[in-house]
Image (cartoon, rainbow, N blue to C red; front, top):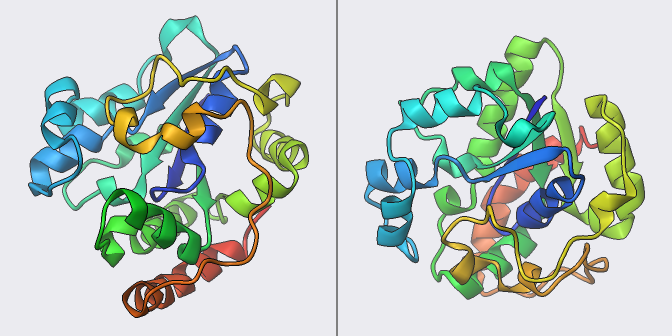
Length: 238
């Protein structure tokens, strides 16, 4: 089984990748389209040149690999996808070969976290609009709503949330998913040096978050713009 997990940045997505990697039967792929996205858009991201130099920049080849043989002789493959990477013209047919899951997080938390690593994010940068579009696209050809899980629910009750997700995917839950080695994973993208410091210090899911962060007027407006897309998917959470 190929699991395509669709989220925006700063969304517990790396911790989820580590949880699936810890199973032992699951290969993982960290943001397959990142290099292709940067090459195609020309957008400036931290470590842009390193990402392009070490990644596959042909989106067709990336898509083919996403639908191809699962590596390392594993029975599962977890693909950590950023919704913003799926720009117009990138092939999406590979999604039909995957179980597509949508990982969401309240936009106020996403914006606050993202801005600490890259200032001045826009609505396109945080991926909520693209996530809702992909959700609708998958729902249309599935004939039902795809799976949605909220990072807040995972952090509140990791075992319960992952048991629900595994059950919905038709795979067995294992306690191994709740813990991983400190210090990162061999399949981290090169960009981990900039983005993954907190999760590299972790060995499991962090405790539940407190109240929503206070934001500047600019970031509050960005949060308000993203909120309807979050709330739309939140209605379908496991």
